Each structure stands twice: as structure tokens, then as C-alpha cells.
Length: 394
Ligand SMILES: Cc1ncc(COP(=O)(O)O)c(C=O)c1O
Image (cartoon, rainbow, N blue to C red; front, top):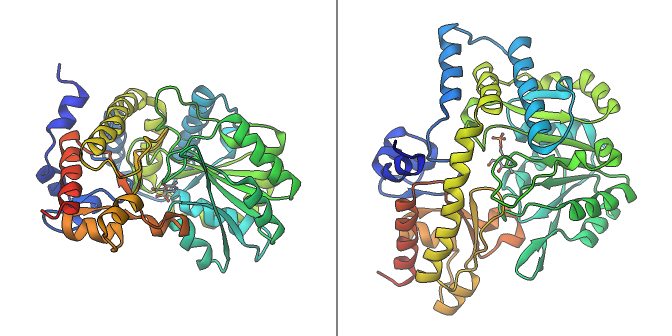
């Protein structure tokens, strides 16, 4: 039987372009799209079947209680079975997307007008959305610990002292790929509690953890974290469903549930019916497909290290512990070669590879690019070849 890896390896750039995704269309003809967080691996069979069922039933109206309940039950079960977190399905609320969860966390659960505290480098919209709600952002650059990014607890404490109230905690972290351990999370909780803060825990990438890693839902750590946290998650990264517009907000205390019952509707309203059924199927029956995907990505994150070591050894790269995003430090390379351009612009213009500009991830991301390696490995190899040729002037 043909393996998942063999099928993916055979997928060509032309086929991917023909699918018409934003990832492949945005750069234009001939450009390899490696920016937005989508995967080039198709769809899990249980998700396809769920969507076909929606079509057969002509179930394309607004979100029903039945669809919402199925999604919530499957998500709650996933949380319990995979991470040991007991959540009441009634507290798993539908959202169109996780970024709406952030908007809700800011509007409903944080002190009116208070700045939002954001460890950086961060997922790009985290830097722009709070402003649309009239909120300032306090960026807290992560610290380096032996080449590994760590949260700067003193910096976070100082941000609370400056009036910040909601901390955005992204775990696994986009773009740097860290998966925080129990001790680190407990230390964060200590700072949040000491300052009366709240946390928006973005755990959208949790299904995408590599062997040896363990996801600990932040709200599951203790009574205190359950009390001060709202969690945003979705099946949309693990099973590649972001266009279906369905995510989950997990409430973990009674007070938040009361407030949400009063104010949550406007945030829940845009959730799509096909998305809810697809998410339910992914959480309930998509484990095998996800295991194939994670197995493939595990090989790719290590392959990328080999490719870079062979062709661009001056680029700093540490394979991520979670996510399919590689965070590449181009500062040494560009300084050594006397290249003064922004790396994302340079690689698009000279290499025809569309990457995410690290500067969009916050001040701490200057000189970096984010590369999405959830693509067939031959395309990943071609990408590195193009980056190297761009630097070498060919
Ligand atoms: C950390 C993180 N949060 C949120 C999102 C956006 O998710 P959604 O499309 O559900 O808003 C992404 C997408 O890449 C992400 O990486």
C-alpha cells in the first residue's frame, strides 16, 4: 500500500498551485508559498465524509445546537484523552476562529482600556488586532537561554506593573515553535496571579507536537490558572481546516461562563455549520491522519536542519518542538554577506520563495523569517536551494 509520505512526496508544485490556495496563489506564478500557516497535505477522510454529509443533508444554515454540541463534545473528549484536561462540553463554545477568541478575551474578560501583554516574536495578527479594539500592546521580547527562546518573566511582570491586564500565551508558540513545560507554565501562573492578570491561552497548534513533547493546557495546571484563563483552540491547524471557520473557546470557571452567557453570542455567531461538523469529525476520528501528518512533519523539520547545514550554515535554526513553522535567524548570514535588505523581501525577489517577514512578529523578529515546512519534501529541498542560490547571487 502506498504510504502517506509517498503520496505527499509525489505532490508537485503545479498541482498545489492548481488547488488555488492563498498559500500558493499569493506570490504569483513560479513563487513557492511558505508564508501562511496552511498545510499542503489534503484533507483527512473523516473530515471529507463529514462535509459530504453536510451537503447531502443540505445543512448549510446557521449553526444549530446539534452541530455545536457535536463539536463541543468531540473537542472536550480530545482535551481529556490527549491532554488529561477535564472540560465540560457546555463550556466549549463555538467561535468562527481563534482570533475572534482573542477579540472576545480582550473585550469581555480584560479590564476596559487595559494594554495587552504580548511575548514576542508572536503570531502576526496578535500585534495588529488589539489596536482595532483600541488597545495598546506591550511587547515583551522573549529571552534566549542557550539558543532556546524562553518567556521573560521579569518583563511580563513589568508589563503588568505598567497596567497590562491580559497576557497572550501561545503554546505551542508560533513562530518560535516552543512547547512550554509544566515548570515554565507554573512560573507564568505565579506572575499572573501576583498581578491579578488574565491569560488568553492560544493552543491552536497543540495537535502538532513532535515525539517526546507533551502539551499541557495552561488552564488545566491549577485552580488559579482555570480561574484566570480563557483558552482558544481549533482543529484548523492540525487538520488544515482554517477556511471552514470554526474554533473553540474553552471557559474554565463559573464567573466566565456567566459573563459569556450574557455577552458571548456576538462572538459565537459567525461559526460555520460545515466547520463545526468538520471539527467534530477531526477531533473524533482524525487521529490516524494526524499521526501520519506529524510523522511526516517530524522528518521534515529535521531534513530542513540538514538542508540548511549543507547550503546555508550561517542561518540560525532550531527544529521546533511543535508547529510546522521554522523560525530562521538570518542576521549572521546577511551581515557576513553584506546584504542589507529585509530577508523576506530579499528571498522573494531573488529566490522566489514567499516567507513571513519576522518583523511582522514584533520588534524581536527583525532579521528573521518564518518558513512553513508543511509541504512535500522535494519542494522543501527546492526552497532551500532557491534561498541558497539567492544568497550566492545565482
Ligand atoms: C498561534 C495562532 N493563533 C491563531 C491563528 C489563527 O487562527 P484562526 O484562523 O482560527 O483565527 C493562527 C494561524 O496561523 C496561529 O498560528
